[in-house]
Length: 179
Image (cartoon, rainbow, N blue to C red; front, side):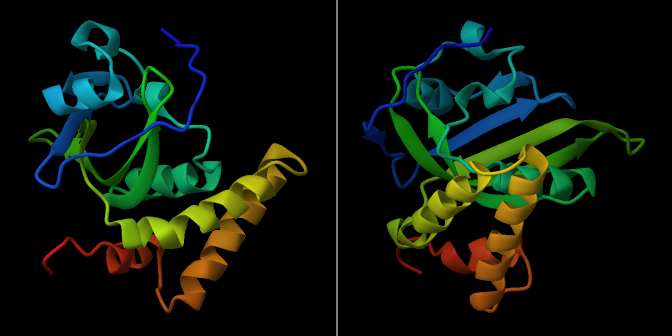
């Protein structure tokens, strides 16, 4: 199922105690979604199960960030990052995501667990202009070249911030309230 959703400027926010939890198979198809995810995305369990997780991918998200996500997961590591997601009515919400590979007792990859929580606005204030510039870069040239340039731009920002990786960069930005 591919939804035709027209994005709008309606922002939704997770509560400070809310956690979105999903599980996917190795192909990224949703096998579990908690109620908070269904509520904020505006999609029912039957609309989500068996569907590619990118059903909620917002067009404001640079491909370069997802490239980092998949490279990290393919290497067997967990991913941390900030993601803007799409709601079924065109609205959006931001999350701080942690995605972890799920292995069976024999070490075979079964899929991925993802836990997302409310991101601090201070982190979004830093990332939104970076993501916007990445999108601008990705809109020029060939898909491969523009994505490489987008990733190079992101890596420059990471270096400029004194971090050694995207993970370190975003973890430095994630500071829950009260910390």
